[in-house]
Amino acid sequence: MLALFYPVIGALLLGLLVGFVGGMFRGQSHSSLTLPVKGAERAPELIAFLKAKGITVSPAPNDPRQEVRKGSADAVLVIPKGHKVDFAALRPAAVHIVVNATRLSTVIKVARVMEHVRAYDRQVGQARLADHGIAPEIATPFKIRSINVGRSRNLAGFFLNMLPPFIIFTIFVGGVYLAIDTTAGERERGSLEPLLANPVPRWAFMLGKAMATFAFTLTAVVVQLLAFKLMFEYIAAGEFGIKVNPDLMAFIAVALISLPLIGFAVALQIIVATVSSSYKETQTYLGLLPLLPSLPGMILVFVPIKAQIWMMAIPTFGQILLIGRQMRQEPTVWADIAVSVGTTSLITALLLYIAARLYNRDQMLFGG
Amino acid sequence: MIEVQGLRKSFGGTEVLRGVDFTAKDGEITGLIGPNGAGKTTTLRALYTVLRPDHGRALVDGHDATTARLEVQRRIGVLPDNRGLYPRLTAREHVRYFGRLHGLGGVALEGRIDRLINRLGMADFADRRSKGFSKGQTLKVALARALVHEPANVILDEPTNGLDIESSRAVRELIREIRDQGRCVLFSSHIMGEVEALCDRIIVISDGLIVADGAPEDLRQATGEVDLEDVFMATIAASEGHEAHGANETVGTDRA
Image (cartoon, rainbow over all chains, first blue to last red):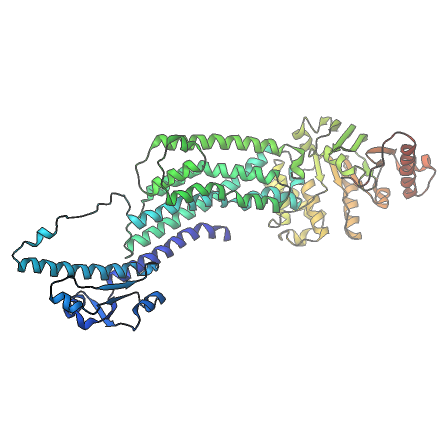
């Protein structure tokens, strides 16, 4: 039961992360916002404008800079002396917004305050132009709009890129204890010697252990994919502002792409467990094994690279790229999948052959 | 029938077997006796197919344990040096598992399992998981799984090692019973009393060589000793003395 705990962790983490980050954004963009203002009496129209936009204005602390640095206020609006005079004289009147850019959680709040202050700035500016008989559009030469063509938008895309490393890790960890226990463990328990005296070819024993490990790993991967799918359903249904939910076909494709890699991982595990001299030693080696293939995935979270077909021939790396594509719902390139499945299967067959040879050695009994 | 011809085996440059020859006939109990590290376990391992000899042959009913592994495995029942159990399987499941590995199944297998459980007095723990079994219980399970396919040749490595008197006696009775069915029993021991009580034939191995081979009575006559323990000491001493005078070979210390 404990063995199925890990595959679910990834999805739970994702849920927590989305819940937290999404909640933060949503909470700040919809809920009422309290803004401490210093010198509010110097710009009554601005304050009235902000209040009309749903901002609650509160008295400012004595030392706004200190308070914002400490974090007891997210942002403070300061209307300096001279503002009233400059404003009345149609000169640019100073307005200061004290923020702490190192505090990520205040980003949204600060952006909202900035947006409203700018909106008022624009409104007043346009009114003044109109007073002088000039069309306000003259002061707005650009109409700027950014268009994001990413299939899954911004933050959601980041979450999707987290998936391949999680899945690869499960592939290399899901059945590892079974591989150790049925080889090094069986040796240490003293049950290997009587077993090998039975009229069964050694390669059949090896294949049996490999298949059990394969089945176990596959179960872990399927459980993990289901957990992720459920989590995406939950996230997409909730008001997290993240509308991304790879369809069921994508998850099935990921499972199929993973199959040869599971075989590859299992064969590697059997080989390591066979040549190690003890349970502990095997544990150490196999504990390090999943780190290696996970590395490219971790990097791909931050630095997307352009996939070439030869990359598909590298076990683990190819799968990371292909799983990522499926999760982002990009078009399926069958040639890439064929290369990945083909080469990984071939390498797996070779590894199993080596494992069978290793099982035939006298050292099988003693390890090493 | 078990035959061993010119068996040699080295581990990391140390020659553990230096040309072992003997025969264990059907309908006889043959005891392989020798000090710790003499090569008893290595000889038996070569016979039950888990080690390959460097030279020589280990034959079971005429089949070579190296070249006809499966043929040999079908004809032997083995209680190896390592007799570990699977902690999550019950005693009965252990016996059933090994029966299946020998191609048995169904009612016939279940019948054999029941008979062995009764014969070895395992009824009270037959359906318990083996985790926490005593030494005696573990050995009974290991014996039952070695005998479930009713092999013509039975190879037992120190079968009574660590057992109490009652269990040892039960095992000895079982060994006699197998002999009386005309099967071949080869077992190793370093307990003289046990060998004396059981064996039709004694093979003394020391430092990788056979130093005495014959019926207990013959060995007594050859050495002039009455007590078999003295016979044993005499043959070992004779072989070591011979060696010290002979070649530049050294007397081995503790070996696997």
